[in-house]
Image (tube, rainbow, N blue to C red):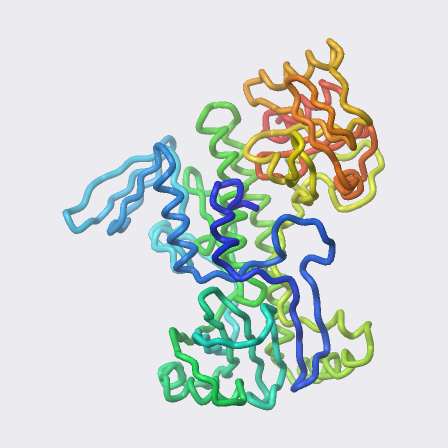
Length: 482
């Protein structure tokens, strides 16, 4: 959904492998399965597997299409000097070094972050004492496009294995090796190929495309904002690979940051708005670290008691539904519900469901001007007031005046109507809730309204909305009310 708002989501979906179902096995028996998209009628799949080199290629292609955006390759930041109003960088290139000044610096230079090191900033957490082999193999296989995870499989006893499909018939296999494994020895093809053959159990042909040995850690910086430096992605936090929380949380960091930074740069919001990036994304990082740590502790027990508990849960999960909830082979990444955000307006009315202030929006099918569409494609990258009505009618003078006032504010708010009818209204977009799912998922009835942030998180909601309430919520959502 974030990539859709960047104008390149469809390219990723078409190239990637979409999947919703994951299965967990104990030895050869399935003990648990899950569906990332248990509800129908969502535009995008629960997860897409795509190699990082495609991800980078498509993002670069999209960046080159955008105005006022410059990319400089073969450039290394060798010094950073922060100031009260600017940040000064020294940049090394093959043609020589030069000095660059910037109002704000978004630091996205990876887990080892040279800039973080130059600034003398710590990143705290723990390293897990285990080693894993990643092997990308090219083969034509009839396995479904699902996530399969084994505990103690016969082809790799007393360890775990993960299998899932990527594009171009590439299958990624993760083998747990144990802390005592020799990384240099284990990544040799003559060691990897027998492991893969044992897993496949037949003589099908495959080609080893890439392999690596890794350990992992769960840790984060104490703060993601340091004056005019704003840390995102792996530079700010790291988690284990179980759950696909690395790149996804990096997208979510920048999605939270950039609309706030844009308002600050334009002089439309105070700098303290960027403090909420720090608060909200450290909260989200803690959630990711907590879930990642729990998954890792289940997959790699650190004591005899932990292993006994893990194995008992797996055995019980064969026949006991309650035990299946204890099986944790990696809780998959979802956007954080920013329920503690200072930007949320607390509810004053009673609501049911998940769309609380701070929640990422749920999708649903709609019709726009007689054509099938999706709710999330109609909002985002701006503030939107989504008003549910029984039947769209030409607004009265007072209502039209209020909508016009919101649209003409320094930070505009676009009003859209959601109705079971498709009657057009001059000057106001109408989303036809063709199946009633928008109203159902947002617990809405005529008069209900939601204020949506540019990053598609709920900022506020009411059973009946007034212009003054929207203005107050907008001020709160942009840190203008402090």
